[in-house]
Image 1 (spheres, rainbow, N blue to C red):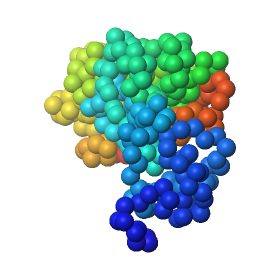
Image 2: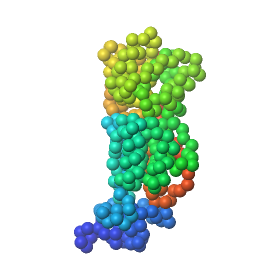
Image 3: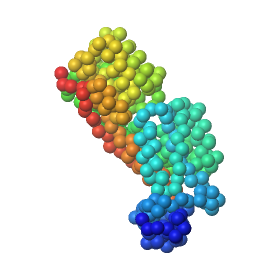
Image 4: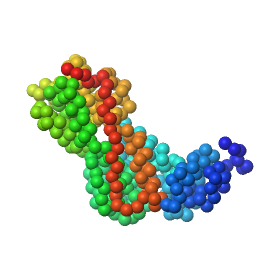
Length: 341
């Protein structure tokens, strides 16, 4: 990196390094919309700014553009290990565009989800990326009409629509179907499922039930109040106290799967020899538990990055029109908590 004359990078320095005019740099780094600037040029400018250590004057930007230069990431449970990677993916995009990200927690309740929508409408943030358990697309209309774009992270198929809300989703029904088919393929005929209330449990349970119905096998679902390790432990205890006698337990997320494994160990039940366990999400702890957990990877970092790219396209004016829906991939990660019987 070349030495700077005054030790601090300016927009003129960035323009020189990127091979563009200072006016172009100002449009890109100033926080306003610039739909006419090609994506390649935009990327070259933001890379040059990062390499030179350019620090924008946020106060001046806010006065000039009437923007806060802040994005809100709204999640139901900030302590769930699923979400930090999602937020990091968002930041990987926004950092290069001089935007900050703040994360807020709703506990998945309608009151708190609506509270943060009202909060965003007050102009405290320029855009919203979020996981919402109780709100529908129509609930976001006032926010969109106020000029605040919204990207939702969803767990079921979406189609887009007239309301300008963009969706990034993983098909949880298809993923749960694949998990259950995998267990059936390993020889399991008595597969139980545990889930918590709220969030993606209904879609994942539907996928589980569809696979069992197709195979002609019985179902056994326990729904706890919490999507957590404690909820998983309680649900597993309920299964063990029943007459179902499963050879496999499918947990609707990895935290519940860890709780299931804890309950099985307390009953001296060997995993996977006596009961196999599968989770969902592939949180960092999934490969660290004993035995390592078979689970579904949703690639949270990539989801966050794609959501942020979509939001920035709305803010820059390069994406217009009706709401869109983008399906992201999932992958069944096979580890030591399952085996053929």
